[in-house]
Length: 177
Image 1 (cartoon, one colour):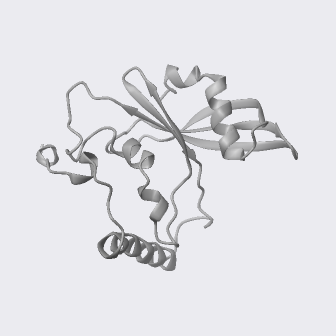
Image 2: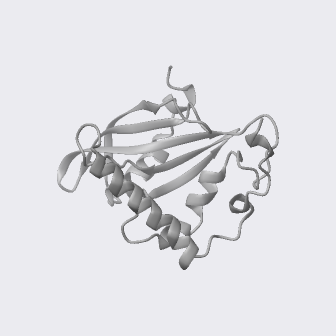
């Protein structure tokens, strides 16, 4: 798949703002950058996961940088926020404060902003890489399952879910279609 044209023409001011957040530097200067597809296998957003990366000049000299860009396209038909297949659920979730109260062993990528575009939203976030080189062994899967259980239990025990229509999921009709 070719990189969508809208991503080939990203506003350099926007990319610079995102990269400065990622680098924690208000003066970081981008020297080069490019876009590559990370995946085209998503269910909700099959052709919308990219890595924007390059080099730039920071206080410590030239440095590599990398951020993730998710493109959420608005469907041609209306899907209400309480529907499981609502197109902006992830955008709404990261813009809420629900990730500020995650259990200590669970973390979320840093969120750098959501950029509305005609018919879509660009979601910018930290590029997180796996510390394990190669395929996961059984112990890695067990640890991940344990941490996911802790995450789910946190909301059962003490954390309140945000009061928003995109959390309630009243309408599951699109699941069976």
